[in-house]
Image (cartoon, rainbow, N blue to C red; front, side, top):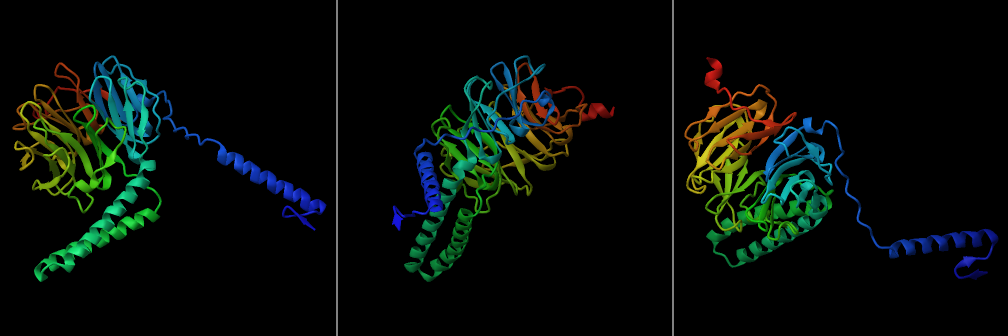
Length: 395
């Protein structure tokens, strides 16, 4: 006989009770509130100050450096000693930016954005890049489908001459649509963010690999995918983002391309500099308004017309340049591979390479007052040596 769906043999009754108990347990688990998974914090390491750091910034009287394994260190004594902050990520951090003495952001791998509101002492994960990527992939696929449908509709009513151009655009759009759909089926991957810059405490941008551009209008509480606003069909890496003194915006990219925007990032147009290699960043001189793009093999180009045209400058170094900073007086310093450092005090007309005793790679630099710059890279952070130039060293 059967009762309540179970056989009434002794073994069957025991089995039925076990099944009911399992079902009841699953019901209880489903009814329980879902708790957020605690983030993995960067390991506290006694020699963290000597590890690899990719950027450094000033927060009031404090120095803040970010780098590998999610390490963030701060110093209140001009770099004489460093304290490791508690950071809710293990991913490498690439850049740090402060809009005030207290409020700043750090970005890095996995598309993560971190926020501090106490000058770099404590940090919170403001954006979990991997968690956000699924929605971004869906939005991109949706835009790709809409573009294909729009072009197909336009072709039906176009002239024969117009159809040829539309057919070419449709082919590219269909390729992009197929690629977007494949991304939906693939494992989630959040491209690394390579730079972050804020115009105000609310308006900010973060750029990264494979054409990623994010924007926030509320201080980072929400980040929107603005990649589609950049005329970048080849998904060139966007290695650096910065604003100029005239309100214009710059993106440093590959193939000698610099993207510019004059309308707050709503649209971005590519500008060919005449260079064919990669740019790793852009820095703007607040005194003159001149923008400098820097990159592979000591390459520096400058623009004095808000990015419309670019002119090559002789940096005096052959090593790739990864970071730059400018003083309130207009002196610009670039740092890079093998300890390369070059400086200009006349808005890029002339450069003076500075010999550093240690030839370890430098990736970040910041001005910290009284004509002093701090650099960071392999082996940690230190004060920039302003001693010998290349010419003096040869004498």
